Length: 636
Image (cartoon, one colour):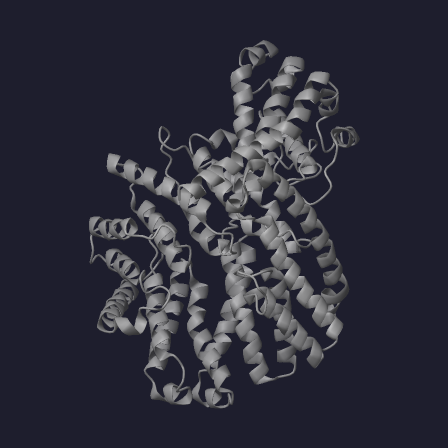
């Protein structure tokens, strides 16, 4: 068993090192060449670490998790230790929020199953405590994947089911059977925490169920029975969180459905919360969320009609002006990312004033700067909940800040290698499109204004420009799944691969939201489809009748080419040579790839352009990205 313990610890240590290697601090590099060379070295190192991780999972962890035999006491202990390390970075010198949430979820699920099979109440409570926390984190991580609501729904429903078990244990007779004081505290905490699984729910009955739970929690807090049963429990914190959950029932960004009576109860509790905080600030001032509570209270009052929209806007803007622009903890995320989202949701898109335009520009520029300066400390999932909301509700100001530019900047800040990849695919597509127009112009007939080869040649500049920007935008859907893209240390689990496969649809839906990018949506949707539609994804999309089919074929090729040859910042696999890639084009001609691609790459002028882009061009892109990142850091 000691060997398994060592293997588990090494896995956690490798995952921590992989996170550090994949997101190096830009400030430690003296030059762009140093930055790109370090990325290359780091990903080679990641490749070696990932191979060791795969071996450990296949030979040590998965056999235990998939066994039909009951876990031994030693196995339970080692699995629990590994889960703690992956979730809380326990015992490791690491600064990350978590190391491997999905693997930890497999462990906590198996541990809970075994505890239930043994009918061990105390162990079951401890296992449910771990599992409910994992379910909440995974629910939030997958909530952004709107194409697969079943994934997030799975964790929401599982978390709710566990939460209701905790609530059932509050029955006074059952509660007294819990001999362990720590487990009694877990029951209290997780009964309250159950409310969080109703976040972003719009069903009126579910929202009423949530209110009923919160009402019950306040009754528990005022009941001397529970206070006597757990005298050392932090009841002030318990009440603070329950009142905070009441204020979070309202959401300016989504229509939450409540009856008039329910809304009256919410605002009454918000006002009670306000009085409580003002009465004893010294008790609550160190709790996370304390400084943001006045904004949440104001939102409740606004939605209940006690504040006008202008009054509420003034409160938001005043707090936003006073924010700490270098605070990257939870409070910092509230003020720097959530408040702008609240403000944007208040804007009447049909009547945008010049003041709104000025404010929006400031907000968007400030948000990009905040994301660029954000430390690579693993807190990305928390921030992305709000960032993805801002992107989804982005109000385009064509002459000030186009959607394409804003989303690209977000991508550069959050995951520079994906930003460089987008630039590379754009540039490769541009060159291939230029050469293809001169050689086989008829392939572009059907595009706007092109009824003949002569039309294609006449409109070649417009076609090339379209192809370039469509390629730049092809991976915009990845902005929603960036947590999964960061999984470098092992093979993807099945649900993670489903998430990855969702990015073309997510990107297409995002591009359709804006006038300036709507025409690129089909290319984003089809850039992983095979030429003959026999493979690729999404399965229900066909490129056969699209006027942009040729552009999709080029973007698909450029995407694969860059991914196959980039060993700097996206892959730890050994990069392929152009000749190897052309052989793949010929092998897949007519099925995966367009039949004319391989012949196009045989042209000397095409080969020369592509070789330049994959060498000097790629390094130029990494240099420009380094300069972009460093400039923001130096002027932060």
